[in-house]
Image 1: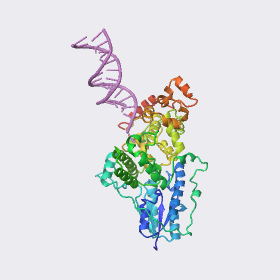
Image 2 (image 1 turned 120 degrees about the horizontal axis):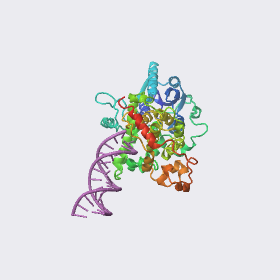
Image 3 (image 1 turned 90 degrees about the vertical axis):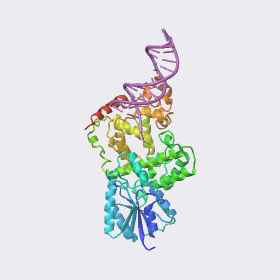
Image 4 (image 1 turned 30 degrees about the vertical axis):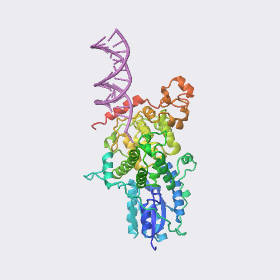
Length: 482
DNA sequence: TGAAATGTTGGGGCG
DNA sequence: ACGCCCCAACATTTC
């Protein structure tokens, strides 16, 4: 027990299934857990405000979990390389362990850090905590990356998606008092004016919160996941996305838990529904695969023809109305307000609001991606990029551009009783279900009875859905064959 | 993980 | 009985 190993936490903020931590423990080292705060090293995609608010609490939760095992989290400020070198010298560490990340800026940063640490005589060891398969481990027979989900996912399953989680450590060695750090509070991650107040009714950041959320999903929702995942008015999804983003739980743990659950329960259709959930984990894998192989895609369309797409120049405040949930289209405004208040939006609604922004409003998808980046607690460069390029029709396996959502029909189909709209757009709560998704078409008597004065209590639509659909189709036609 | 237009089919009302 | 029309229901095509 002579050696000392740093375990450099990044977005793997858990003790279970943490292969870097497990490797340090298995190597017999005295473990010094460290987090280095250096958001500028993630530019041009440094984490947004909602993400920071989550991180603040997740770091506190990690520190608490480490203390329960006799250790603690040492928090330092970047630059990362300086911080790690200094701490290694102070602690007498010979080894540094971490789990890999896949965003372009971090891949480059980590490569440099690794080379410099090795040059300084330290042993470095990285591992995979975030993915079922590494992005480079699954390729087509000709060696090229996949661009279509279904063949990608088949290849993943051939490669195996059932790797067992890494062993959970028991009691850890104490961190010497002499190793100082800064308090999490001083990183100024939490918003000073408390606009995140509404977040924490819905969320419990940290590994314990992730486990509880998974347990609840297995108990309540997974058995109907195939259908109910599209319903924003009920809890039909896992709501694990922020926990996954920060690595408070990992995909290997999810697959293992699903397998265990389906082996122990026999509800009708459970296997099919559970597999639908595993497939969604597959989409997360696909997003990381794409970002690794096409690192320019957070900023530029994968389909180069879209570099010349005629987005609208004069947007007349439409982007701002979309951001603030004042488009006059109820399902869209409900989603944008859910996002603002909770830092999260149901995935079906993300597609609907993204379709409106990129197709009906003709705002470049990058504007939507940036807004999501700053407001989502689960903002993830890989998933965000895939989602926006998919909607805009310029990405891998993208929706054909002419696949334009009608938010009224989507609302009627997936929020049939209007409960989701009533919750987030309370000024429309008095409208009967059959009118709540298109108040501008409701008879005057119905509006009066519900106490809704259009353009007073609630806006009329920012655009005509039929006309802007036709406009989008015309612009798409201009791209064809280009 | 679309929507809307267009085409097809078959039952039922009716002269 | 028969042809005709209407239209809902479903399928196919187009964007």
